[in-house]
Image (spheres, rainbow, N blue to C red):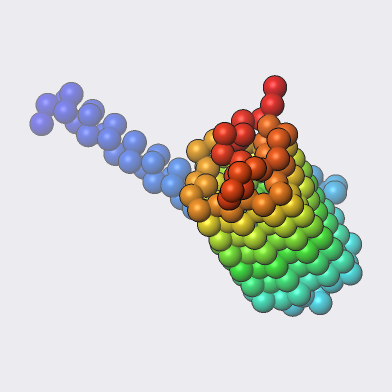
Amino acid sequence: MRYGGRRAVAALVVLAALTAGLAACASGSHGRNCPRAQAGPDLSDRTLSGSSLTRRTMRCANLEGTTLDGQHVSRATLRRANLHRASLAAARLSHVDLSGADLTDAVLETATLRGVDLGGADLRRAGLHGAYLSAVGLIRARLNAADLSQVTLTRADATGADLREADLSGARMVDSDLTGARLEDADLSGTVWSDVVCPDGSRSSGQPQTCVGHLEPAG
């Protein structure tokens, strides 16, 4: 093999190693934690009962990778908590403050959320298939590429929410405010609109009602 050929092979080996390293980093990604001086308790990668969080104030808690499937959590303050990759399938959350929390890649399939504040929360790629959200605050929440298929969203405030590339197929949105929300490339097939404030500030209309044609934020 010529010298030039050996150099090319060596370069390919280095490139393969770098690619493998990047893939390993991606697979072991972590959520956003608060600065150490503000950090809350570390309960990451544990299976928790709802009672361990109910009526607790745990700002900036590290709950990354925790399992709360089927649990009931009520009146908890988990502001800016890290719930990256947390599993809350079929969980019931009522009056929980999750504002500013990191819920990227979290699983909330068929979960029930009532009076939950998710304002400014990061729910990118979160799975909420079949979830029921009532009186939930989603102001300026990030839901890019989230799975919201078959979700029921009622009396929710999602003003300024980022729903680009989200899956809203078969979702049911009732008496909710989407003023200024971004829905570019979202899947809206089979979405049901009922008394919804559309992204441009108009109300869903027609028979059946729809926001189609009013999905661009005003201004």
